[in-house]
Each structure stands twice: as structure tokens, then as C-alpha cells.
Image 1 (tube, rainbow, N blue to C red):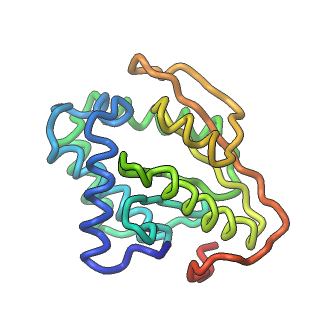
Image 2 (image 1 turned 30 degrees about the horizontal axis):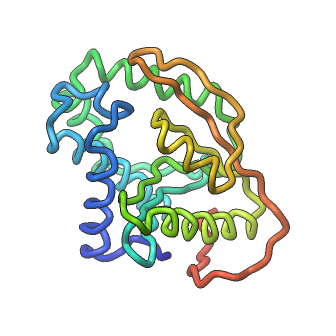
Image 3 (image 1 turned 45 degrees about the vertical axis):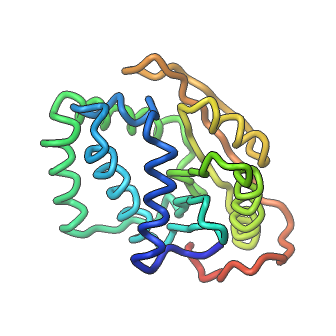
Length: 207
């Protein structure tokens, strides 16, 4: 697994993300045009920009898996991302859903502990190698977290992702009904273990 850096990495990562979230009710509930591929790409591009600014966008060696992971305490600011937020608020979600999205994020932050790292997105292609890809993410990201003794937190509204988190070793610590859609929000965490280096991930400090 490696950090997403080149344009080719980004293109392949976006293919994975777009396929994984094309029918995701966890994303489409906030969109003015739920079936719009363009709208989904705007949301995914914003998540990518946020992860990239925190040095936390990764793609697996087989290019079938993507994860965005960064420390919660790592705050960044740029006018480019501010303009992205404003564009999304005005044209992608609309004001009503934009305000709901902010309230949704407030709910997430209220439940999730303030320390540790957060996995904002996890996606794998639906292929025969999907489980192998998921376990590569598990091995290398968990090793990175163990190295820095960090808890990883993640949330999902996808039942498939919920089962995947459980399979690769996350612990479910809370669940709550989605306030604006017929969904459940599942909250996961993975506590660090004694560090043993085994992967080839370039472990540049993301903390």
C-alpha cells in the first residue's frame, strides 16, 4: 500500500471510490440530485482534498482499495478547500441538506472520542480479491497505528462496510439512527497493539 500522490494514483482511487459509493444511501441523502455522478464526485473530491492535506490518502498495491486516514487533531486550512465547501453547500447539497449535513457531522463528533485517528473513507472494489484487498488495508494501516500507539475510529451507514469492519478487526462501540435518512450509523474503533513491523508501507509520520 502507498500514499496517493500521482495523477494516475488519484484516477484509479477515484474509480474505486465512485464504484463503491455509486448507490450509497449514506452519501446520496445529502445531495440535491441523488443520482448525479457529478455530485458524488464533488463530495469524494472534497474528502480526497481533506485527506491529502493531512497526508492520509492511501491506495492498495493491487489498486482495488482506498482508505483516507488522518489524526483528528491535525487541523489544516486552505482557501481552495474553503471554496470547495461553499460550492458543495450552494450547488451540490443545497442549503437545506447542507445544514443537515453539518448537523450530521456534529452528531458524529459528539459520539466519537476526540483523540486518535479517523478513517473517513474506506472502499474496496467488489471483486474476488476484495477480501485480500481489505486485509492488506488492515495489515498496513493497523501496523501504522500500532507504531504510533493510536486508536482508529470509523463510522459507516453501509451494512456491507459494517460487516467488513468487523471482519478485519474493528470493534463496534455505538450505533444510532440516522437523523435524516432510513439508515443506522455504526461507530467502530480499533485499539492499538504492541508494535511489530512487517509491511512495506512507507511509514512517514502522519501524526
